[in-house]
Length: 83
Image (cartoon, rainbow, N blue to C red; front, side, top):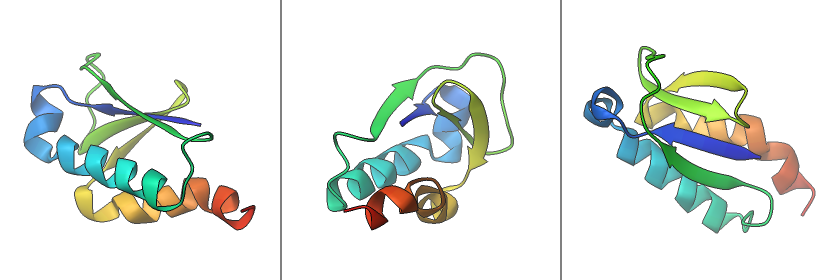
């Protein structure tokens, strides 16, 4: 699974680095390095309300820093349970 976090100007102002760091910390905390990649991407012109995160180059979601943990557990909870 790959999460690509937009770090373009608009998303940067909305807190993209907090989202990026939180996702990376959670991957580290749950030792999911071999199953989950967290990457940066630049603006592709498809801005959303909050920080844009693309999942596996398909689905796009809009995240706030406060909602990042819930998002991670929603998408990766099954991987954590398998350990």
